[in-house]
Length: 374
Image (cartoon, rainbow, N blue to C red):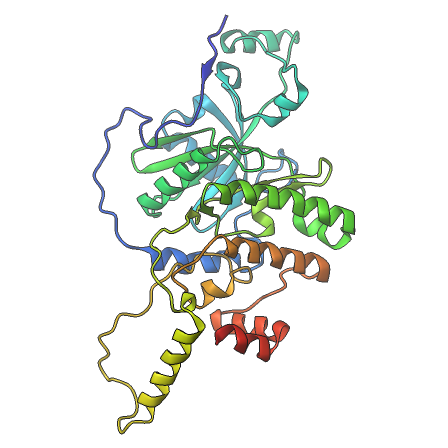
């Protein structure tokens, strides 16, 4: 009888026999964040595709999968790539069959947990022979293989895998099954969730369905925020919702970070009296004899995390607030609600941060915007 082994997510990068290389970790935050904004030109961005025919594979996609299997050591023995279901700035996601499903303990499989009495197929060595005689044919188990591009920051990859590992017990969050590394290529293996494309149902949702949708979304956010984690990229394509089961799963923690990371005191957190005194002093200084601005201003510009998808980023992100909290995820969820109620996707469609603030001001009005800024 085959030995059933645990396949919990291993320590990051402690997977293959090739030795760890020392790499310089450069501060490429601005570059990756700016690319993250361009990831959503059509409102989709990186998307885990809905249930489509797996038999129809684009020749270019097939060539890409073949190259991936040939260059990544050991991937063929573990998984059978079926199709490419998502592609973004930082990674490509493939749907694949888990060939070694019966060899490991699969605590991540919610479907088997719900069934109560999971079917156990024959050991891997006997399975092919049994299938040929037509006696037993196991229903294939699918996973999502996330191939993270080698151009991604090593620290960003490490951060994403660690956060997924910390959230592995949250049923509303896509857990990390395991991870592999071969030379400079890192792969994360995640469960494949059957879901419906947001564009196919959001215009037809009734009030009860909207309530169920957001109950599921906020359950996931509560689990994430309880761990002190900011997702930073809440949008419909990152919340895989099954309209039949009325349940969703939060995915894609590529931009997520722990609350308080690189946090610095921000002017918006000062008391109202302090802010008014600062404004008065700045006006007084402006009325002085000197005018204009320094030709060679040596003061560093304000740096803050601006990661996220355009149209879903909160005002504090647009204003480069250095003390961002989990409230930015709630704002993004509110934009999803606005999208559903208005039957318009995307609702906000600005090209830059200034236009984004103008769109928000159009809804809230100048008076409320001034009160927020004062």
